[in-house]
Length: 308
Image (tube, rainbow, N blue to C red; front, top):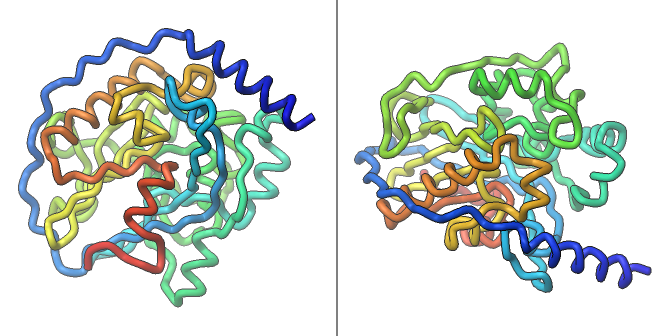
């Protein structure tokens, strides 16, 4: 029976590959400004869960026979002036959240394994909880652990807070977003243009940790640009793409997946092309999709930090 189901899935994926891929026109990117990040600026990827799926489920024209690993991560950022999380990954209550609220048809599609919440890992390492949480977006696998950190302010753009308030499964799970104890803080991108991005939000005021708007996947999707003291730069782009092939080709997500999860498919692909242009104009920039384990593996995982 399992083999039959797999054949049906592969046949369906093959049929949907006929969906046309958007025309690719990579714009000319701009160089990022020089930043002198202060000593002590560093980050770590906290792997809070994982899954395995067909590459074809993650990117247009992906392989029908190659399995790819998916991670659910939180990014712990430390700076001389504070500690924050970018996304929270899977939280202490994820089994309850997923089990009671996730759409029945979506449970096998979005199934996860090896949940290991960030709160548990931070406590085991003897590290204090973050002062603030910033979300790339408020989908269930990025916002699950908000309720694990009631002391933290949760910062999202106005557009994302509005979308999350109205959101429903399978993308948003209300129990994660409607807890009375959550200290929401909506913000706007009121900072100056950076490279091809017409606005920004500088978290610490020194250019080392900067949020950039990436609307499309959700109305208020954001990316996080981190510069560490040795000058290396990392751009965490949330779910703009799920797989690095989305940037390399470039290509959107698999059409059916995109129809389910992307609020605006055209805007999402425009964001893909903008990120690719930025990468081309800044060859040392390391772009990190939220779920691509192959990229995460090259960086390493908490308690290992990058920078410092």
